[in-house]
Image (cartoon, rainbow, N blue to C red):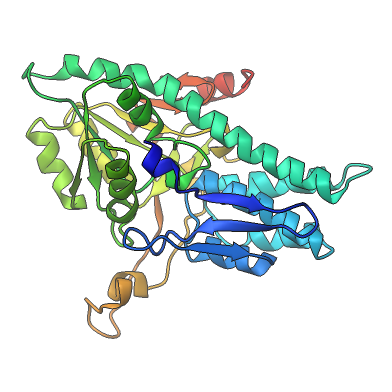
Length: 351
């Protein structure tokens, strides 16, 4: 695991008055490790928009530091509002900038106190990932009991990247995997490639391989076949926003997996910190779904694969209804069964 975690997704460099945000440019992975140094708010906005930094928790932390940069240039509030317009679905973004606005409104606020708040958001994400891993670890331990062949290794399917690259810590969906690896628990991961931007192929496969976790890359449309053949005993994904009733928005294709898992009687889990919950949104039908540029489908990574002028529909996320989710794995425990009452109950627990 140390090889992967040596690559820092994001970090603050310097002091509160002249420092800057350094981001791992995830658009260049897995073939090139490049960092972006963001000295102004627009460069942070651009990095979020073009997915140089992505994953709901990491976006939130990056935006918090972006607010600090905004304060260096005289206006944290306008910086926060601008950053909030970069992407519409991941609720951690809005949670983080609102928190920075509240910090800026406190009497006696200084650049140092604002940087301390951003660093606290960063630290809290690291700790939330660890706690998610702790609550998810028993679920991986129990997988061997679902195997028909006692000599086989249980399989865990994941989608997109909800790993160390998507957070400030060891990930959300991957957190139980990292802890299971440390504990010597046998399991194998199947990673969907995740069309159209291939976050599963470029990022999840990259980081799990670097952590020496048994990972096999499959195309998105191979998931049903892999489930039917008995190689999957559990699905675990992340989330970008979870509504009050437990409906979960995640990378497009997640809903497909939930339907397939239900058909094959495979437990389907969503792992997310409490900052990803949006209790002001009653259910998934109210979650705004970002639509991406047509070019991501027609000429992804620079090579045209579709006719010029073809119409496209390119939602970046879909919503999995709560009734298809076995449990939500949070930093405050499991939410099971997934419903409005249990979401509210667990989120009121002390973190």
